[in-house]
Amino acid sequence: MANYKKPRFKDAAFKRFLSVVLGTLLLVSLLVVSLGTNATPGSSGLDEGLSESVVNIQSFREKLNLPKENDFSIRLEKQNRLPPRNIDLYPRLAKDHITIVLYVHNRPQYLRVVVNSLSKVVGISETLLIVSHDGYFEEMNKIVEGIKFCRLKQIFAPYSPHVFTDSFPGVSSKDCQEKDDAGKKHCVGNPDRYGNHRSPNIVSLKHHWWWMMNTVWDGLKETRGHDGHILFIEEDHFIYPNAYRNLQLLVSLKPNKCPDCYAANLAPCDVNLRGEGWNSLVAERMGNVGYAFNRTVWRKIHGKAKEFCFFDDYNWDITMWATVYPSFGSPVYTLRGPRTSAVHFGKCGLHQGQGKANACIDNGSVNIQVDDIDKVANIRPEWDVKVCQNQPGYKAGFKGWGGWGDNRDHRLCLNFAQMYH
Image (cartoon, rainbow, N blue to C red; front, side, top):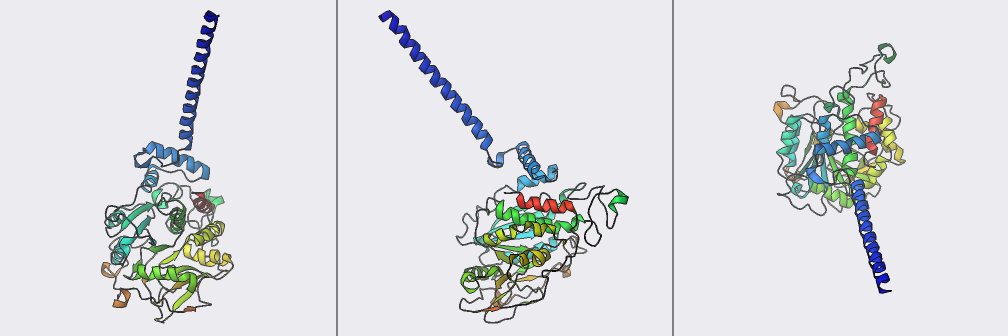
């Protein structure tokens, strides 16, 4: 019996050993597959190769039916994932910091003025400055790279018409021009309400703003988890030294002083005014100079993507005033101080003033008076709020200035709203 049982014991032990080995190999295989399928785009950090980026971006584009990217736009996508600059100089942000987003186009003379004004803002070193570029322009990039007064991040709109020289969203050889009849000319495009076909340099204004908003609130690692206010300024907004401290006060006072206010503004909605000088806060219609709102408001705006994307006006702000804000069902007020902390100094349109000959700034500079009262916070917590009603401006019922009638622009705009969802 001994000679019979011994081989049986060895045989059973071998089978158990074999089953353990096979089970282990199976688990390892499943783990490898799981890691491969669950990896997120960009999770491997800055060392990921361009080929991997291409795969991620292509699969992303196919899901949303975004325009086919070129090598340059793909490089811009990768650039957007770089960490902020100047972290060694400013390793920690203030706990209650308000992120600032500066959106720019191609007016370097303007940008130099704005950057210089920002460098003098009290508290600027406590926060993150994000500069959003409408495409890529070397001179604009160099100006921004020279910023050393705060933590800085640059992002570049990869679907800007300025990045595509021979295809949509840029200009294509098959595109209809001006008032072409698409049937007779056999060209591509849909005219606006006035019979005019799209101009890429013009529609980029609205595309960039919408892409930037979606990217800042829902796409960037640095801000997609931020629920507080974010301040938005443009390259022709001169910022006073007290702007940041005043904004912090407005944000802290808003819940009690004006709970129905959607935002806080650094300047009056009428860009020609410098404030009333009252001893009170002001609640008025939302302005487009130095405006700040939180994620709750962004969610309401994002929920109106169709209204935004189909309104026939190439201006983002007029679109908001004429169709998005009215759709909220109640007046959209913003809270500001009685004295401005920001000034719109632009003298010409969005895509003018790039060269020295037509810089749209007298002698390449601006002369904005900054008094001592503009250098320190000048808002008082004990002030009451004066509400301004029935103000002039664009309202519901305005049909738009046009320039935004092409179905391709509508689709691209809607795709931007879905990029991070």
